[in-house]
Image (cartoon, rainbow over all chains, first blue to last red; front, side, top):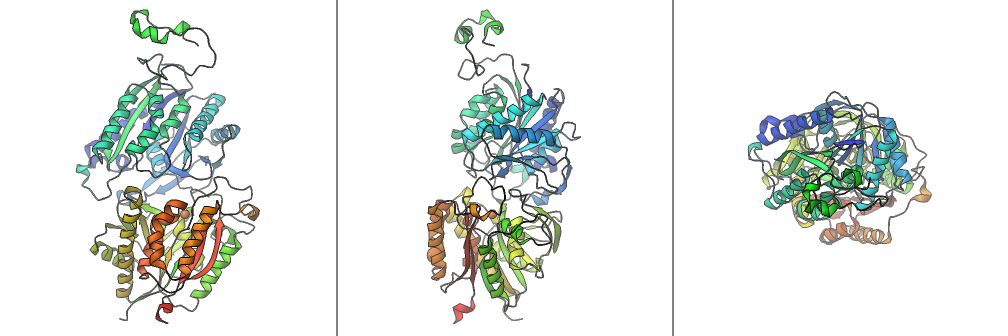
Amino acid sequence: MRDDNVRKGILVPGLPHPLLCPEKNEGWQRVRDAYEKARIEIEETDAEILVIYSTFWPSILGHQVQAYPEPEWTFVDEEFHDLGSIDYKFKMDPEFAELIVDKSKERGLHSRTVSYYGFPIDTGSIVALKLLNPDNRIPAVIVSSNMYANRAESIVLGKSIRDAIDESGKKAAVVVISALSNRLHTVEIDPKDDKIHSLKDHEWNLKFLEYLEKGRLEDVSQLSRQFHNEARVPKVVSFKPFWIMASIMGQNNLYDGNVLAYEPVWGTGSAVVTLTPAEDTAGDLEYDEDDPEFFKGDREVLDFYEQPSMGSLEERDGH
Amino acid sequence: MSKGEIVMGALAPHPPHLVYADNPPQNEATSEGGWEELRWGYERLRESLSDKDYDVIIVHTPHWATFIGTHFLGIDSFKSLSVDPIFPNLFRYNYDLKVDVELSKAIHDNAADSGLLVKMMENPDFRIDYGTITSCHLVNPEWNKPIVCISSNRSKFYFNSEVMQANMIKLGEATRKAVEASGKKALLLSSNSLSHRHFTVEPEVPEDMSKEHVTNHNQYLWDMKMINLMRDGKTKEMIDLMPDFTEQTVAETEAGSLTWLMSALNFPNYKATVHAYGTVIGTGNAIVGWDPRKAKI
Ligand SMILES: [Fe+2]
């Protein structure tokens, strides 16, 4: 594993079924199990802060960061209210939330913390925190998803979050909450009959998962607009989760990817994926290198792949 | 039992700023005022209701968005705290409300008969959306009438505005028939703004009225186009224009509330009373009443 302050990136879906009724569908149970595997992966790192970006929490006034120390509520999803209520009590890191706000202001963004009793924390964040951090072992922050933000703003937000992680000196796990394809079944279905809403959605999901499996985070980030057009119901202006994740994690493809589950949840492409900073990758495409700031000699990136016997280029790869 | 009726229909937008500016005891945030034109408009709407005897408020709300059909509150009371997810600094409101479950279920059943997918919401822990609370508070701050709360099905996202409108026209008819059959007198609220492009920043003092204006001239012109059609009693024409209006001004009419209201009122060809037009953080808001008695004159 590469030594990076972000120990792990995790993609999780946000619908409540894997939390509330996994037994109703084998695929939902597999997603539930995958949350559990991701939880263990996080636990095996020394991450001290969970940084959550939730596409289930829209904002308008710039970017909001949850900073209420111990939010507590009995929550009901506005769509799937018949699945039951969710009692929660979480532990936030208000200081870290303030740091994200400071850092994002330094980079020209409008942002603020929100710290109010009873603030309606979104379904996705609740499901993720309940399943990935059940004992509140790691304090968290939750960052909203601005409805109007497009790529530049999202990339800068990600970099601001990265600034906060680096300045805090904390090791972080970054959790991004989003479905891949987000088209729900708009009719009642028997849970047993759940399937990805359309073949086209499924094929795009598979393409993204193929890249993620190879740790190609920056590639999926670069394809976000295409994915938005092909596989997303356009409720917001753009598909941001991979822009955010990539910009926090370094805008490259240097990760070990682990697809822990991919299943339909009420028609949506619901994947649990972990990305771990890797020493080296098998890549030979753009973004397979880090983002260099200074030229330190020939990196021989392409030669390397023509002559595999050369082995690792760690000494001379530009660091 | 005598035939029930809709005693008034109103466009009753729900910017939480208007409650915040009023400083009611239920809201934790306090202000120095602001948005008087709209608040006085609500006052005029309340005055126009003062000689109306009604039993129930039926509200169609953009902020209970559902994708699997249209949902209805199905429990007779709710009490909790509503915190606005976008403006939590302005709106943290302790509500305590009653639901007319019988009428709610009757509209639900009628809508099902007309082919719509519907569902009753029967989880007692459910939190009422801030749009419903804001519109109902501003129309009836005493909270002495039960409500029926209808979710907004977002077929526009999955299909288009035309499909959304077709469904909302059915839902409006189902609502009217249920009210008539119930023998009750109902006030109907379409809880939405018109043009809906917000500013993405908030002034240091949210009620600083020197900072308030419509986001752009395009939005203003479109809002006036729609309002003038209301004033002229040309509501069918307004509904025909709705998809373009919604597209051009990212209007909150995308939720279908206003189309539902017009259908429930059977597309009024009498003049609406515009009580106010004003902007809130850049969005266009009109407070408008349709009094069916005018149709009879
Ligand atoms: Fe709204």
